[in-house]
Length: 271
View (cartoon, helix red, strand yellow):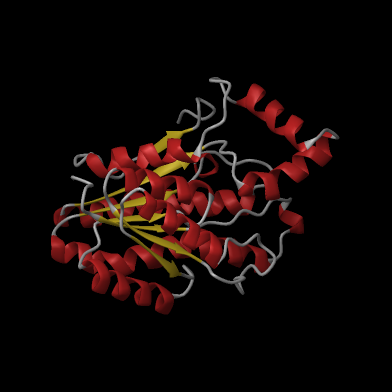
């Protein structure tokens, strides 16, 4: 598919991986929908929030590159919020060619310390959000007889890890949903793929993972991050949001790739 002139929705696009994906798509000439929460989510009130200002910053970055972009307040756990976004995008751009389901949250800790509310919060954003957003855009893509759905999973969706059970389960679910939708939507010329990022230096790492790693090792957060990179990644370097964005570009352009889970992890996970 030619990305130039297409319309792409990126959820969780205000910062981190989502921002990197949005900017990569903008460089290829896509119209961007920068979708993220403008307020603290009721399903995870204490989770680090991007907010309206960050959304508008990304919109401005796209526009500074000569592209078209709009910012949308989106709660991926609420079907009404998603449908409202879809109607606005159709009114603004007339079509939806690409959906990148990137919005996600991460909670770290042992299973015995995980409440039912935490399980539901992570599953609602990471798995249910992918389901609801995909379900909302599928009729538009079916009518167009083409579309690209790209779901951001994780290497944790390929291999479980201690203290990441809930997050890992949610990301395994994303891969299963990806494979099922790929088969279901193939007759409509809609491809569905997943990307599994490895170690990307984002707020999710600095605000959630690194504090626990630092405390456990009794070293600084920076030292903990560098140790993780040196011991876990064969290429010896972390991934960037732009790395994930380039993988999205590939999957948008690859018309005969569907149902796959593309690992972008510097060799830390290979199957």
